[in-house]
Image (cartoon, rainbow, N blue to C red; front, side, top):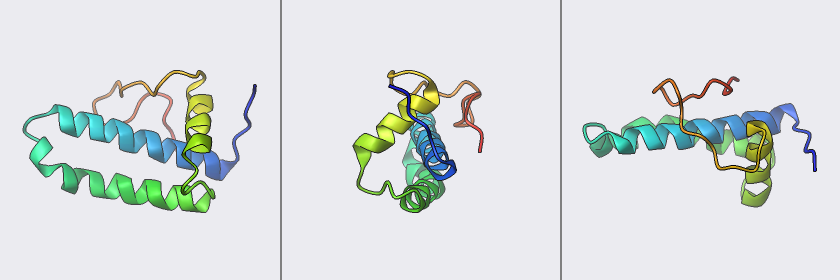
Length: 92
């Protein structure tokens, strides 16, 4: 099944992926983990706002479907490749 993303849905999926990848990076680093709240507050706010604008707040199944479409597979999101919380396909 092919899913077509609107601009707002794409932005929400990308914001979600940035949040997940940032959380992975922060929590994997023992030096950063104690400051996770500081590092994650901005990506969380961005994702919340993007989900709200796209009408996806509370619709996790649709969001995860869009994320899979954005990634080009049904696989779970890949960790970032550049260490900054963004993979090569994560553009805004």
